[in-house]
Image (cartoon, rainbow, N blue to C red; front, side, top):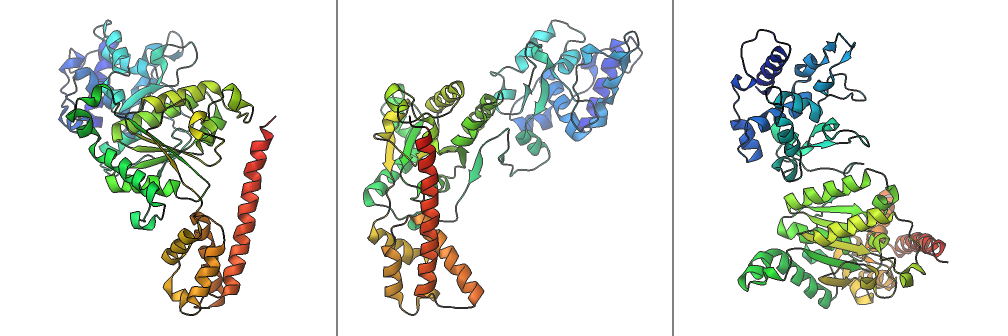
Length: 444
């Protein structure tokens, strides 16, 4: 449906431009029905907005519709500048730019170029709703030379894919994380669980709390948490459980990957994550956030993080202004971890290594009962004596399961358990040594 309508639009536009006879004397005479686009966008698009939406969709829905723009200027033996367009790396069809939209919208009224620029501003619902945008203007090149790109999310809507969720890519350095576990599977100290319940309460009732006593003048809608503690102590699981409880997607951003890239596109990619998250009410979980620690003079003596300061400042500002839930996780805090950041936290939660009683509870919860019909108490006591985190316990159980599967045994033996614990201790020591080496390399 869209392609037949837009084919008529392009043919009419070119007929008018070259002074040829056509079915219509004005581009606006071509009948356009915006009802379907209105249903897809939740807006009431005007004529100009419908044209731009259809233009952005054509390369995906019916690319040959745009082939008419390949016509050459015979006087110059080159494409018409006013048609815009760009070449893809593999796609052979015509790909529109902002200039292509400007040609169509200002064909009968040159003053409409200003209107075209407004359509691609950050205030317009095209941008706010992540529907389409212009991107990658070359340095010093005109604004409308940017590529006209429809978002994957909106394209999925058009194609009736209702379950679209963005996935990790170089353009979108964030990954959806989920968990099959529930709160009963998270074994932490009572005080930590109380704090987590408070965070959950805020997620549930924030708007009501801020408005009931007129506190919205003083309390921003956003909420920032700092989780710190050794690896494998439940930080990622906790973030996943908060999202699961409140029906919110949790997206993990590996800060070390963002800061390592430091390319011209990094800031755009960060902006894309935050813009998406604001629209969709996501929880953003910043893993390995040690990289963002404040580089004040005192802290810089201990850590020389190689990080692009411009990118870092931009990221911290977006975190500060984000109206939703931000969770930052660090594993190697120095002194007071809060002092290491320039942002304020509403909650600072420490995830300690589990003590022996907690480890015993973790083992009892995770290890299959079928493995422990003999020597149950002895095996559990041996397992709990090993000073490892909950994440390491999962690794040990995996190794035990593999050993039982290979040997055909049904009962866990102390030999299998001790061997799995020994291997895990070696792995943990190696990972710890590698992390400490990175830190020492950055210490004068």
